[in-house]
Length: 186
Image (cartoon, rainbow, N blue to C red; front, side):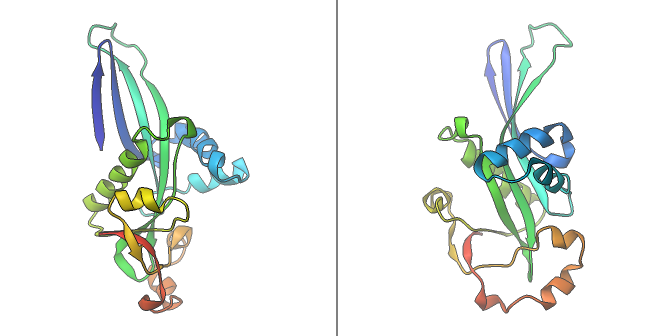
């Protein structure tokens, strides 16, 4: 997803990209997540480095400011990390993804970036053939309800295990579908 706003001599583009395609943002992303959920920075960076197209995958929302057309050629573009979300596969539900660690920088909250991040997550999932997103939240149910998410039964997130262990093996330890829950969007 990419949105562009022309602001005179500076053009602003908001884009969601997989973190593993922008490794220069690893440390900033670890700091952003640690603002909300404290953990060792080294451990957080190690976890973020495992992002891949095969899941789990970290999607980051960034704002890039580029000089306008009348500016000198070769001027450097500046990127700012706005938000993060991690996507994992769901055990037993091959057309579903689990969304977690959704966070927008504290100074930027209330400006629509959370909505943009979740729209980007939905676009990313849809473009890869996934039909349902699941998440767990305790304090942001109203936000997700405004985005069309509804209460559902819990699901089991495969997390980083899916990159180490075949999904079929994980599914053999999964409880039956009717014993799960959370919020979801189709």
